[in-house]
View 1 (tube, rainbow, N blue to C red):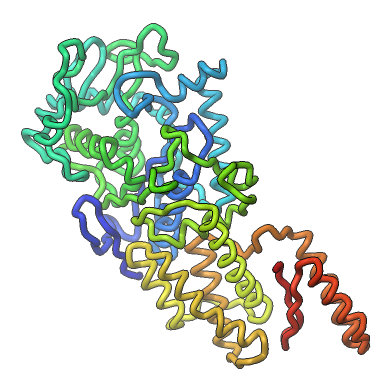
View 2: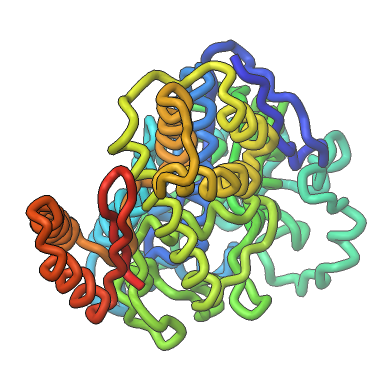
Length: 485
């Protein structure tokens, strides 16, 4: 089994991954709050942990991948006051909150399928685990780390920090938090401004509400992940993932909740992907500067010059390391598309000229790619290694270089394993439909027949007419190939 190294946010260093109970791995990732269209930021998180899921599986681990759906408890502004994001959307559109949640969950799933993101093993919803969140809250109360206030239950951060390390994930400490927050005005339900809700008392106008020992209400945003990860992965599991924007307060609060309830933290490795930015500013629904995934697929946005295939979006995301900031621009997407088309052309050609084989052990390119991917998911280095081979493969296709059949088979196997099985890409050609590919295959077959009959005039006419239409035909030893100019 390959050794995998992951950057652990908790220790702030790259560590050798060691499963608690090999070959089994428990992976929990924070999924979307389903009150609006998915955007590029959602895609980056999903693709990052899809890559991790695929890599762990490829090297022999049996992964239970849990990715939640937040459909209750996430309030506007990510704080403990204000409306529930889904309830607010439901009111504005005169729908039931669960109608909103279901609609946007389905939209999210559709986009993920197009992007090649595999379904998780389990996808629990916050609204389906109210009992577990109530039990978690009661346990924290019983252990003395929470208090009841006007029907709501709050986590006591100061009491917890006196005995445990609050802020260990984000690097914040209780003194900084006390200095950076305002004094309470005496009207707040909280004892301390940094305390957070485990359970909120529902006001008369609040739509989403459930009975509890403390009255009708709803869970705090952070409670769901602690409750559901423990239910499906156990009190201690291997990896917790999510976007860097969730590190504080969401993930910090998760660690505190789990420790207060069970005496120890939950995940051994905390992995965070960085943000997508536009002009240096984080892309997000709350900032109003996002482009939906559907807009990328249709090209229907003022910042986009055209529509982009989902695989181009996935490729664009994978060309940057998951822990680096990825700045969006239409020109960057166009560059990614050109690179992806070039890659797919060679990938398809390899499938045509070499028989399928199992991944070749000891293949230099395979080893180079796997070394990069096992080094903290370094997809850009793996992709660059494959691009370094494209010139040599094209020289073979053009008849300028001879490569043994065994090596061609190894190259094909590497492309299929690294690009397909692990990076999750598909050998499509951007903006070229299957119908057009079929038509072009027919045209080139007819041209080949004309050449066999020494009808050079017809052969040249077909080539020249296609060139006028923006299709370049290239003759080689293996036959003619084509591409859009």
